[in-house]
Length: 346
Image (cartoon, rainbow, N blue to C red; front, side, top):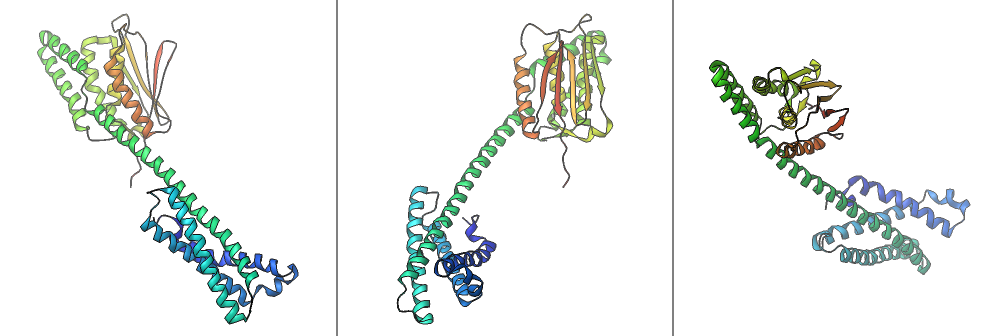
């Protein structure tokens, strides 16, 4: 419980004098006229009120410390509020009355102090009410913040699990299509087929190398597209084109590994590709955001396996970037906008 204000050194040192002077002014206005304020302000009564306020604050602070050990707020908050207010009233009346009695009887020489006792106790009880109210407001605020932090922590953990799952997934459809291309090429040109096998190994080596990395640079992501482009270029020839136009200075920015590969997979999976319906995939940037677009020539059937992985990816980008991704269709063109992440070096 040391996170609350009663353990704050600044509050403990500053509060008694400030509240003491405020209480002294209230009492002085009650007993004396306004014209006597300046005359009586700098006197031993001020020091006494400050000392009395210090005793009040410390007794209430120690009460909270003891209650935190005996009956913490995590048990039953309603009972804790009841106990704290009851003991605070008791401690305040006992401490204020005892100190006042000793001061007025033995130092000031008063014989009757009932009016003073009622006045002082009323003011300090009023202060005790707001003192404890302030404490419990901080407790409720802390609980609310803890709830938000736990919610964010759970969201992060779930997102990390999903992201790890995304990075560890191998799309079987892509693998089968790649193997079909290689088998077909074996019958035409064995040397070319060897190159395609090398590209396939590079494709999956990149996935394995980055399965434990949260982010990679844009430059690495662009380089990772070369193997998948070579594989499907062998299948579709001039019907598949990849146009990359990205500013050199932003290639140091980061992305989730496998982002561009997945978007290319998605484009290949959802489109009919032939010499009459070519796939021209354009990758460019606008500031610190990556733009990907291509003309839609959609298959009749949906590519559910790729869509599921795409959902995982976009959830992750919402975590890394406030704006997240954008995906829209306009005039038969599919558009993606992906945020590039800047990692600050420690």
